[in-house]
Image (cartoon, rainbow, N blue to C red; front, side, top):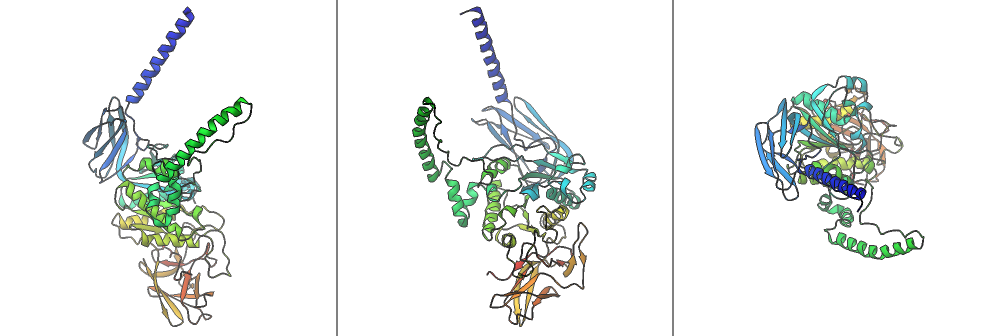
Length: 532
């Protein structure tokens, strides 16, 4: 061996030694999931999970709010500790996590953490709303913080997310906060005087299916076909195992065929496809695996959800999917039936005024959202059929969206004397040539009103109620006259002497507009009394 070779060999060994030492040091360092960072908000009043990675058997100690708890990493380097419940604290604190190294998280608040999820109307940022300039300029509020989860997919559940860091609201940062989430948080922070953390895990244009885990589909019999589809790429299921064994056999045939083709100067044949392998973010479980599963153990107060446009032309099946989503997340978080509040889709595009029966576009999707309230416990729905935009699928009035979501939380979770919703259909009774409709959530009474922009709803006492339709046994629909009678609405039409059913605002965009509110300024949800 020449001196050059010996020298090169020596340097190569040295490089490997340095690389090995660096890897060993890196492996020894305590590491935390991305959901933990400076400026984070931790959930008050519940046991707090803190977890991460270290060397196998390494002792890790977590200190926070006067508590010190230790745990040893398991053989795979995973560790987890549980802190006793910590009360609300608006003063900045530090959390330290120590092993062979020390991590210090600064400016930590203890308050309420809400998961903000869905598609583009949840992802839409404050810089896109009405009066964005003033909203951004007046946004300095250290009690409100957000962490944005980056959009990713995964075939199998991941342990960590790709994300930004927790960021307090300020004119320099809030432009990129989820607008619906920010205005929700602003109401909660103002009315309940509590820090609010927003985990913004949203992705524009996504269907509901990719946000649900494999287990979530199995719980709902009506979603069996989706569950069977997912089983096809899960190696622990009977179907999945068969698919993988088939793939292996196909690869055994393909490899020699590909080698022969290459030796002959030809292109190899297409290779077999690994079960489930795809980058399609609309595929069931794909977003859950990458953007929800890694944050499951992080303590939360509840979730708000704004999605449905991408599922907009289906009907009752969406109610089953909402049931699957909510039940799934609650089961995995292990915090009981935590609050889950969602947004009913806004009015959009145009509907035919000569079709009083409606049923077009998103009408049945909204109905499925309304049904979710009675099917799934501890849920609430923000109705926004009055603040949409004919030409914009992303309504710019997110301020009222946030306020209406917050009304549910303030009423149900913060003990405030707040009416959480506009009128929701309760029942009907035929009275001769009229039908009387009763409602829940009438508040201080039913009124006809008008909503324009960000201004509060204005009562219009002389206006007749709009967008009511009525039908008899022939199932022919006619626009109806509707009047408020105490806490009910009486609906009639001279062309229907023996009515049996009523519909209200049951179309993509009610062509007459909507004007039924309670005195608290919250609109009635679209509904129908029939199931034709």
